[in-house]
Structure formats: structure tokens, C-alpha cells
Image 1 (tube, rainbow, N blue to C red):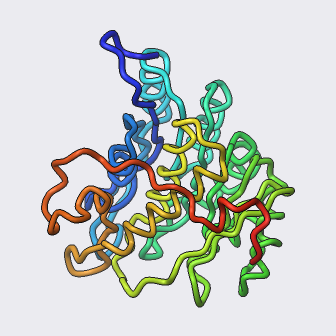
Image 2 (image 1 turned 120 degrees about the horizontal axis):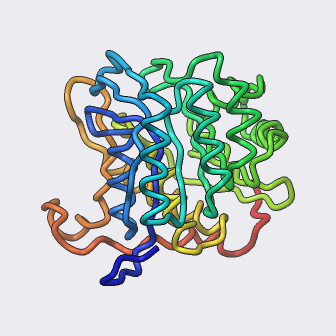
Length: 297
């Protein structure tokens, strides 16, 4: 519901873990939501000790704490979209899936399996719960290639394999799947499909190693678009454009892999100054996608 003073900002809820370094997780989600003109809210599922070098420790919150946070926000404030990230145990996965199933809002599921540095963030025992409980309640699932292999056994070696990967994930029940092909050689190519329509999203591969938080950022940007009433293909295309800009502006932080820059849009033309001005409007879909649903791969 809207506050007494009224606002036209959609409410977007992230259900994810904390990244103490600020590059991924809840922190990346909330920065994205602010940048794209929505009101971000959070349900914390885990605390990590994390920096640019990796994850040094992770502590899962009790299921009761996760449920209480969710109910507190949804029952009073309301949500126009939900995004999930790190859910490290089967019990957490099943609890969050149940909560989403009872919420009248689109859900973007980022089935986080490992961190940017290769640290495991999902117990092997939770994989079946992701397949049978969480993916079926997803409006859009956004796995990367490692997560596709983890969930389905399909290994993507070429762009053509993205279709096979998408079909395998769709068998678990999400309405749409976005297979992120960023780990393939060449352009960064993603495939969005519901099993009927196909949307290929391309962006040039950028020469920047500071890409921490890309998956969280992309999924959150999709959730923002859905909360604003955009159809799934339009929301995903705008999110792809936003995260590409964030990667282009990614910066060094600490001694390892730095984060993407969530505020890049607000700093264009300002000489790199702080983001004190108004947030930029969500970017429009790339022209290739606006021309129709079946753009060639």
C-alpha cells in the first residue's frame, strides 16, 4: 500500500544475503533500486564477511527471522516486485518460495550458487528445493552458466547451447528464463525466453575486470522494471542496458575484483562527481529488441 503522503515510487523487495564489501547482495540490490527510481526494501537471509578478494565467512539467519522480516514489510507496506538472491539452505529456499507464492507480485529469482570468487553460497542439499519449490514461483529466473550446470547438468560451451540450457531450466516451472551467457567468448549474449518467444540480448564485451555484483544488479534491475509495469522482455532489455553501463563504470576497490558502479547514470556529464542529482530514468530497450521478439542470434 502507499504511504499517507502518497508516492508513485513502486516498492521492490530483495530477499538476499549481505555483502559487507558493498559490491553484491542486499547492498547492490538496494543501490540498483534507488538508481532506477523505486523504493527498495530488504529481507536479510545471511551475513557474509566479504571483500574484493572473496568470502571469508557466512552465517545464515534463522528461518523465523527471515519470515518475520518478509511479513513485516509485505503486510504493512506492500510490494510491486520481489527479487531473491542468496538462500543458502533447503529450509530457507522452501520458506521463501512459500512466502512468494502467497504474494501477489512478480518475482525475479537469481539462483545464486557461488560468489564471483568461486565461494559456495548454496548448500548442495538445497538444489532440489530450488528446482522444485523456488523456480516454479518465479516470473523470471536469471541463472548464469555455472548455475545452469548446477541445476540442470547442461553445460553451455557455445551460443547455440543457450537454447538447450533455457529449455532445461523452463522444465522446472518459471514463466521466463534469462540465461546469462557472459562467461562465453565474444560479445556478452543472453537469451530470454518463455519457451515460445525468444529475445537475444547482446552487448559488447568490456575490458574491465571490476564486475563484482553483476548478477545481483541485473536481477534487481529486472525486478524494478516489472514493478514499474513493464512487460518482461522490456524490463529485461532495460536491465541489460543498465548493467552494461554499470560494468563499463566498474571501479577498483581493495586488492581484488571491484564492484560495478550502480550510480553511473547519475554521473554522466557531471565530470565523475557524486550522485547528488536526480536518478536517471530507466534506460529504454535496445533498438534490436524493440523491433520484435524474434531477433536473430
